[in-house]
Image (cartoon, rainbow, N blue to C red; front, side, top):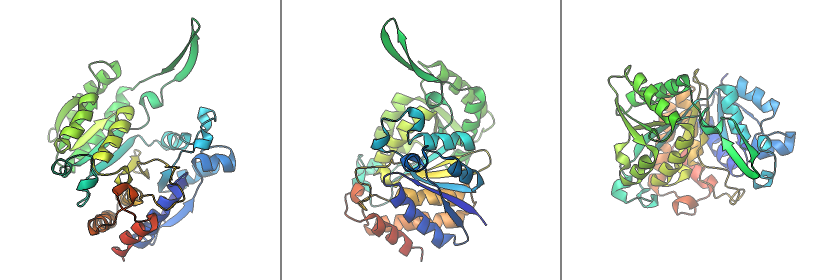
Length: 347
């Protein structure tokens, strides 16, 4: 039987993953679920944000549904014990190098976007972000230089890392409008120049896909000015992290955007792109749609269940079109009420 690891995490993570699991139980009743602790909750329980038992579960599972990690009570801990190390550790240990972050405006949310409605309606893009390289995984530290404190973080990529994420971007574009925009900072960074060189080399294998390049600062501006020009954006870890959060606000709310972290085998970790939001945790105010849509990506990318994934996405769109709004969308619907509105459309 197919095993799904449920990793709720901190803050609103348990609330939104509960709604997503309930949706999966309707559309895929044959799935089996096991829950593991991650993040600050795991540190308090087992002394580490990614305990051995959770890592063992993650390795056994066919796919992982992740909530969120982050706990202000853990801010004073050494970096290797902070909640965020759970997600970084899972990406590293499971070889999850490709992050897919779709962003589109659901009908009815035009007023929730930071953009003019006529601009926001055109948003329908996927950011393909490399996950296991860049400054997040380069060497880092602090040192004293002539009596002055100094900190450093190494940004690095090798050509194999760039080539494999570029292929994911081109393959994704083949299922969409056939356009890839590679985002870098090649005018300043040697790492980005290698990135651009390798992407051009890989593009030769995809003559049916149009390739353009854009510096990251211009890409940030264009996401606001004319987001409809983008189909697939492929970029590095740091730039992808920033641009995908920006895209979420263009599309209405960070509470609406899912993501998938995939490895070479198709096994993946699926999570909403929002954080743990400790300020509203336990209040039933969180938007579960990003978690539910992440469950749809799980069905599609790890289990190959396209029909069920489409049903879930249509149910979310229907609930939003009906007027269901959580606080982030300007409404007063609770987490449970939004989840129930989606499940009614699946019954």
